[in-house]
Image (tube, rainbow, N blue to C red; front, side):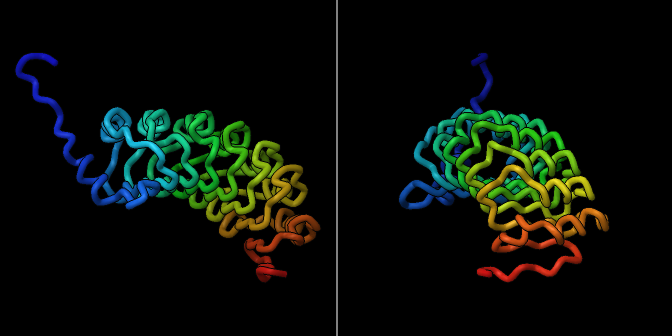
Length: 229
């Protein structure tokens, strides 16, 4: 370190650990901390705790570069649940997540409200690191037909049971892809509310035999299937 230059004050990391780490050291809550990319770099370099299974990082200011740095941190290894909603991650960050080997045990991933468009959805659909994922929430993003089709036909999400795509930009082609999906063979719950009101797409959804077998399916102008039926 250059002479006269002060070391950064990282005492906030100790305070956050004291407040946010569960007694069994398996759950870490870093939500609502105003975390941006610079703090992500500090956390990745200085937070060496291992064995975290559930990580809350929602309601921060994390962008793609910050997430990419965190993905290589020790406390990201072995995660089962990752809550990242209400950040600024974008498609570059989603691509980094999809390519991260630290995500191989992940079962729950929340990414709603993160400026994700088709490229991000395609990256998730093509990822070889998310084959244990059971729940994926991509609501309130900007995903269109191409991203929806990639997810509907993905062979890389064999365990996915719940998919939330409410409030995106999915039109007829995306709806038809889900109606005739060749992937997501274990899907049980699909939410497509508040997308484009395309009559042809809605008709395809209504007539889909595979969607009729889901435990819960919600779409605009489509009567929801009661859970358990």
